Image (cartoon, rainbow, N blue to C red; front, side, top):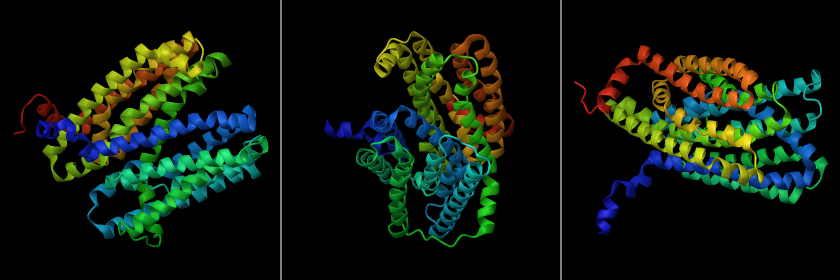
Amino acid sequence: MLDKISSFPIANLIRNKSIQNFIFLAIIQASNVLISLISMPLLIQGIGVDQFGLVNLALSVVIMANIFVSFGFNLSAPRDVAINQSNKDELSHLVSNIFSGKIILAFFTSILILVGIFGLGMFEGYQTILIFSLFMLFSEATLPLWFFQGMEKMKLISIGNVFSKLLFLLGIVLFIHKPDQAKWVNFLLAGSAFSINVLLLFYIHYELGITFYKPKFNKIFASLKSNILFFLSLLASHISVNGGLIVLSFFASSTILGMFSLAEKIGMVLRMFPALVIQAIYPNASKLYNQDRPKFYSYALKTAKWALVIGAIVSFGTFLMAPIIIKLLSKKELPEAVDFLRILAFVPMLACLNNLNVLLFLVKDQKNLMFRSSWLACLFMVVSSFFLTMYYGGVGLSFALISTEVFVFVVSLIINFKHNINDLKSLLKLSLGRKDS
């Protein structure tokens, strides 16, 4: 009986590297959310609501700047690492160039923000907090998540992420007690992450045998140039996902804005699911596409189907549980927030529709196609959200956000029909139970 259970496929799922990638990526995101929820009341009690708002404002500026520091490497690097897993020399040059490029971008971005502060008088009211927050750019630059993702060894970095967040939490308890200490909050967040990153870099060098070479600026420039479309795609995606609240601020009261913000934060956590699926399967899918095309088609189709099924369960579950979820988080009855969440609940299911399209773009390194689809989606989101919000408020914005997911799926499918028709035909034949001739 035990032999039968152990031989059952579900019992062996956790041995699959892609499943392990997904689990550890989920642990990283879950720990981020959990520590955020725990630290929030501690910070508000220690530095006050006003300073807490300024700390988050500075954090939002740095998060936007981090898109420039990452410069699309979080999309391209896992594929390159996965393909070169067994070639230590090539991997060493690749890793050296990417880390050097990101650190240079962190310095450049820091200088731009400092010029904005001291030269142009920008960010008035939270300039000191923002200056201390710039260390976060270097914690992003040294984060080796993309390396472990490509190597399909996510366990260590997920443990490291949890430790860095616990260090941050300990720092808040020990050092953040007064409003004038607000400038240290984001610095502590960056410092705890940076210290763990340094330890991970030692592990990469001494345990995995990766050599860190002196940066070759021509190679760094070439990699930055090749990644510019990925960077622009990520920027467009960031605007599409996070720009709705800005649009709503022009038309709604602060009360409606707060209720929509609550529903949107829940929606953004749910939106992580399809993104985590792509990140988890991307390295193995890249290897299969280059080494065994039929296995890639089978693997991609199977993961896409399961992602859609789980996404649908998550969406319908959230729709049904929306009143309970809102009351649990807000401690109040907020009917408008429930309405917003019931619409946004379908974001993960609709986003899963596009997983197969995005996977094809990534494994084939088609930056230009991803660029087109993401910016068309961004334009659609901005236009639709403006008009729907103007006439229907938060409900209109919610429909604009879920319609954007449908729009990007249709656009990406059309682009794939035009540029990747043979791959789509093979996937369709396999889904219908037919073999390629």
